[in-house]
Image (cartoon, rainbow over all chains, first blue to last red):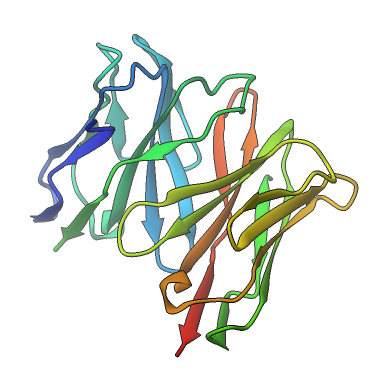
Length: 116
Length: 112
């Protein structure tokens, strides 16, 4: 039972480089989201998706793109990495997020990204 | 602006003590409140609270929601060193910016 799988676990980028953080879930969840966690800031929502083909911005979307071509996958793209994007990134999924809020969110193990 | 505030931000107690962690929220279209435990990696789910005044229990942990006061508490009795973690509170909102609004967490340290 894999749950939510994130890759890579660690990544170092140079300023200006681009990369994609991968997230996959095998629970047939409709709702997926990306958070970043910074010291003293808690978890902040970057982007979310309520189903395949539908994405929307969260609290801190600038510098990130997402797409949802399948139910299982929700990659996060950094277009041009900046030191301010150094953070731990978590992907989460839940059965349904819109207008329900009655199911827990399952989190991946996180990706620690450093931008130098 | 939606916000969730947790207190205290850090707490050091001795094994066997009872602790109470606090969470207050101001969230538009509030739906439910969740508690997570985060050790070294991903947050793991503890409780989801949607109804006011109904206590949820799991072993030595319990939690209750007060919708009138817009707050929740998480109690841990007979603490053990394995309870050391960051405890996160999150409010689930519905609407155009769906998702969880997290507090900054309470860093709990249990000393033997």
